Length: 294
Image (cartoon, rainbow, N blue to C red; front, side, top):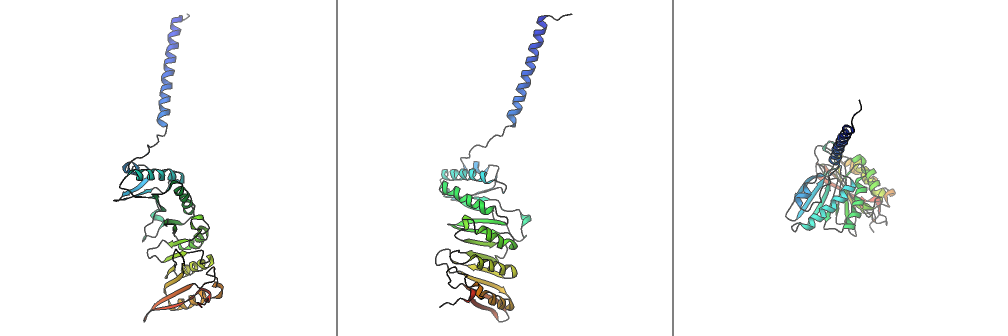
């Protein structure tokens, strides 16, 4: 028996209606899967509530914001602009610092606390200059074994996690733009046992590597290569906590003529070695390569 046209029409309408409902439902599912972008923060509270922020503190005139270690360089650049904008809009804030979370405790000696991977003052700062600076910081941060990257004015500092990596890190970082004119290299240790202030205009890279090797071979010592970050610099090496025999060995080693060019212009670079004995602390001094002071 043939169906009447009215019955066929009713079924067709019903089919279209069901299909329409299905399309609406699917459309709704698609909308719910879309990523909702966070609104641009306008206050400190809104800034600190952003998901990538792991710590946020505001002082009487300062703002310090730390972001998760997994934050990408692109996210940092975008977020730095937000921090600057919020700081500029907050009358009480005169400086704002952005930090990247440091390495996990599992990578560290139990006696030390990890500094931030890097920390940079982002306000007040010129936008273009800040972007260029962050690009240089990212280069250093990409070198394995580095943390604690910071600047005092224009003078950079980097901290090395493991003493055995220091020579390689120095050789690598030394060639990067941020450290091209010098910088400070430290070892992450509870006793601050190693600090090297390198001024390329005054001290050769090979002389610095010799200092690093001494620190590696004498883990009981405290090594400081000191130099002013402004002219005339006058680098001086101090090694303390040595035995009397170690002092004699290092005095002969450092005064060897092969190190006469420790200063790139041939000026003397002094060293002071010390040991503790029954009669107190004894000091031995000399110059790299035995270069005279006349």
